[in-house]
Length: 277
Image (cartoon, rainbow, N blue to C red):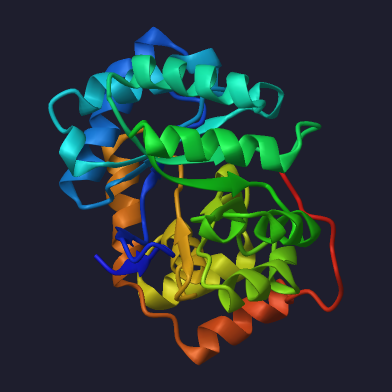
């Protein structure tokens, strides 16, 4: 498994698993738990969740799976913006810790920017770090101006990642946000790298996949992972889906492949509003 370095110097795998939508239907729980177990078995140890997902149900599912395997996972969860005051962030973190059944969250993210000043949320993150409740902190869905505001704050340079929407059909961050993060050594975490499956019948992806003898999803993931400072957290709710995602690590895209995909989905030539889903 190729790894990527956080600003702290800690290495994490470039491919993990997302849990949005998991834990919400009891009939799916065994399959979803098996998917997370498979991800750990394959070294996809970055497990991403959030207090928002199923009003905590995804965190509870993750907590049950990690009960006997906590040391194998790099665990990420997120605080909602309306909880992101000094006291609210600390309370939200305590709630996540309870649902996850753990003493420490490896990476705690602000889910998106709201009306609470970033400085107040950052102070809460620092208090949680000092208390040993979180190891690293970061953000999600912050665009260039937001990131500039953040890193200007005392301690803001310690931001571990910006988790944003990024895939072949959503390339806006390549114009400014991605280069800006790269220039500061801040990894970008790509959520919905498969566009929730909606892009998998794309003709260009299908053609390149046929050339390599793989599925379009594996090409889409390999395309996201081509960048040395991007890691991906596709939602994979079955062991088979997890295995298919893992096989993307074996795909080596050629210059011809990349040119074909660029023709079908050109890179941005101007600033775009940061997309979120």
